[in-house]
Image 1 (cartoon, rainbow, N blue to C red):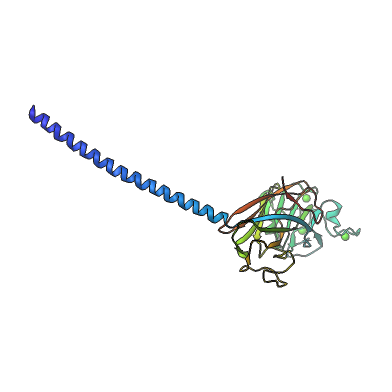
Image 2 (cartoon, helix red, strand yellow):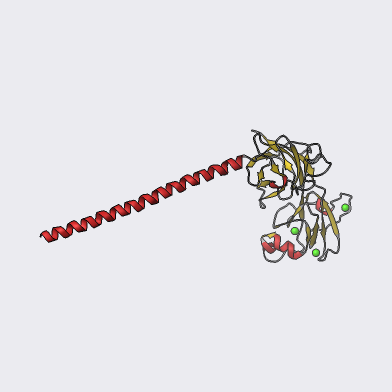
Length: 296
Ligand SMILES: [Ca+2]
Ligand SMILES: [Ca+2]
Ligand SMILES: [Ca+2]
């Protein structure tokens, strides 16, 4: 019995020591974890300070109006046969057949096969003469029938291909000018770090337009007086430094997000390594010169 109780005593001691060891290891782990959390917390607050130190503010967003690009529709493959030219706008019925409205039809319904589209605009082709049926959204460039088939919704216009079915179309190209500056307390930024995005939901093609403020079409960016940051009569380039107190105007071209009256879109201005700011553009009217920056 004594021997038994003795072995129980040694066993209990071993369990007790083991528990102390486990507790020691566990507390080390816990201390490490807490240290890690503290470190993470400091990293996060560093990121926050960084992102708040570079921030742009939009002061206005003016409508410049439709872009001057055009699309040319053709009867045959290889851009042959009859052709009809369409500036930015919506064309159905007689407008589709006679886009220059001179009483002589250039186009024929259910006959077109190829299209050329200027850079800077997009086109939506439709089967029906009221912007319904299958549709195909195309960007700037020369489009063969194969390209129209590939871009159609549904693909291949439901299986049989899209040849000789086009009966209406829209040419989309819209330009605006943003005026923006840096927020109070913002660090200076390099022009190439700043970009914009406009997001829209227009069925069946939701999407967004975006670019840097330097390469933004059609005219890039300058200060409000038309000069660059060195005071020269030139566009701002990537390496220029924009400081607090400078006001910049940036032209933007919308191809995906072509506004309809009454529509709203979201605009963001993003600075690499800095903040992203969000705005609502409210197109209560589409007149040239309208400020569509919505301030609630
Ligand atoms: Ca005509
Ligand atoms: Ca044809
Ligand atoms: Ca048709």
